[in-house]
Structures are given as C-alpha cells and as structure tokens.
Amino acid sequence: LSPMQALAGGQVEVRLGARTVRVTAPKGLRSGDHLRLRRGAADGSDLYLSVLIRPEDGLSVVGDDLFMTWAVERRLMADGGRVEIETPVGTRSAWITADMAAPVRVRLKDLGLPARGSRPAGHLFVTLEPSSDVPSAAEDLLVRFTRVWTQERLAA
Image (cartoon, rainbow, N blue to C red; front, side, top):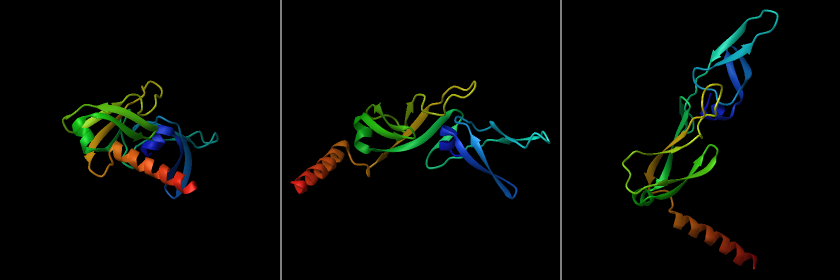
C-alpha cells in the first residue's frame, strides 16, 4: 500500500501470480496487518495477505505515524513564527521558535493513520527544511495583491 491508501483506504490491486485482483482496503491499515481474500464458500480456504506500506511522494509510515518533509523559508527558520504546511488532510499551521536546532520537526497531533481496532490514531511528523526557493509570506502577499490589482484594472 501507499501511505495515502493506508490513510484513506480504498481499492487496491494485488497481483497473485498471473492474476490481478482488486481488494477493498479499509482505512487505517498498518504494516503487518492482514487483508483476507475470501476464496469462496465451496472450498472454504481464505488467503491472508500481509500488508506492507511503502514510502511514496515524500510520505512514509512508521507504526501509527506519518512522516514528511516541508520546505520553509530560511528567514522563518531563523526568526521563528507561523508556518503553513500542506498535509495530506489539508493546510495546517504550526508555530516554530527562533533558531531551533536542526533537524526541526513538528508534530501535528492525530493527523497520522486513523484509529483502527485497538490501535490509536497516529501523528504526523513534519521535518522542516530551510529553503531559499520558498517565497516569504510578504512576497506571497505582494504577488497575490499584484495579480488581483492587475485583473481589476483590466476589467475597468
């Protein structure tokens, strides 16, 4: 499974020799859990597949928790402040303090794998990477203002 399939569940294609079978995976599966494929009432033998969650698109799973990295403006890392993070469940904000020791990691509570059976909901751990390619909040606001202002002038 991919981390997103483990998070949200859904249809998964499983190759069994030369055959490909579609299986519905419930949300919240962890590595080591088992999916049961029912073979039929006639022979009574079910097939149990062990789940393995592989990292994909910068997202990985360890136990109940999700891990990802997010690029942050260098100045924000040095000065501290609020950072907006695009997570698999939408934009979330977090506060960081000035001059934190690297690697800077933020925990977003209960945004990991959902609770399933006796397993609690996991957390999302985001490693913040300083980057000079990310525009500052002021630069982003200026770009948005310029775009809206230009559109309004063209419409007038």
